[in-house]
Length: 149
Image (cartoon, rainbow, N blue to C red):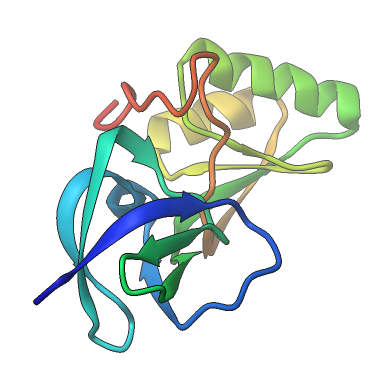
């Protein structure tokens, strides 16, 4: 019998029994059979699709918890000359509805050569990187209308 997810626990102080490592696209789910990193099968069946965040826990009906890990994926690291420049670059990315992971001194986005050219044209410093991708949620939650953009 396959276990069912009964709750998504916020990142916190609880013990994980196993992990499940997924890229950002694979973490946006509502209903599917999943397999932990050690092969444990379980059913995710949420009321609506949402982004499973790095560090959250999937509590199973038998009491086990699977920690969600964001898998490294090919990204651009975007940096500006200073915070104001980075803010301006962020505005241009937001104007194109790009999923973005915003940090104090950099922004991570998916690789796209057209966007790279635009950002470099605006003076941004772009570096190819591989990192876990955990973008900001949209204004209305974890809206993912930008997949395939």
